Structures are given as structure tokens and as C-alpha cells.
Amino acid sequence: MTRRHQRFALHDVTFAGASLPSATIDCWEDAAGHAQWSARVVTRTGPDLDEGELAGRTADGRAISGHVLVAGRQVGAGGRRETLVEFHGSGDLHGMGEQPD
Image: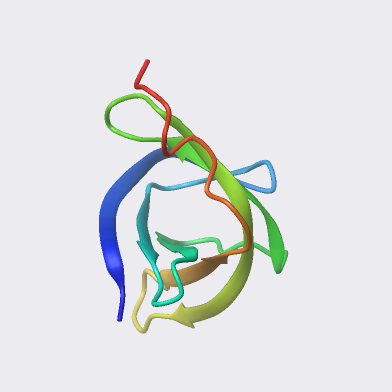
């Protein structure tokens, strides 16, 4: 059972210092009360690393960041060859409780 689920877009995204398109973030509280989060990015050039710092800005200007592990890569069919990269948060998602800029 999850509680306090939030989903939002993240813009100006970087992963391990490399620029990526926007991401979709999901964060929630698990049954034990622990904060959990994940991110999904659709990109033409997927990251080579399996872990690193994911960072970006919310629509209201908050800087969000956290350490992630690459949980999966799904390469799409067709000419565009876009890849869905799923990241799982490892630790806190920093900036969630801060006031927008």
C-alpha cells in the first residue's frame, strides 16, 4: 500500500552531468512509511552509466536532485530508436520540501 503519491515533470534534467530531455518523477511513501521515488526519461541517446546524480527543475522552479540507479532501458522499435530509461531513487529526493524560486 502506497501513500502520498505525487507525479510531476522535471525540466533541465541532467544525469551524472549529461543533459537529458525532461523526466517524469513519481514519489510516494511505502507501507512502512519510507520515502520512495523513481524517474522516467525518453531519450535518443541513453546514459552509459548505471548510477549517478539525477537533477533538474520543477515547473515552479524548485531544484530537485538525488542519487539514482538505472533500473531498466527499453529501446523502441522504428527509425527514431528512442529509449525509455527508468531510474530508481537511492536515498532522499533533495529539494522536495523547499519553497519555489
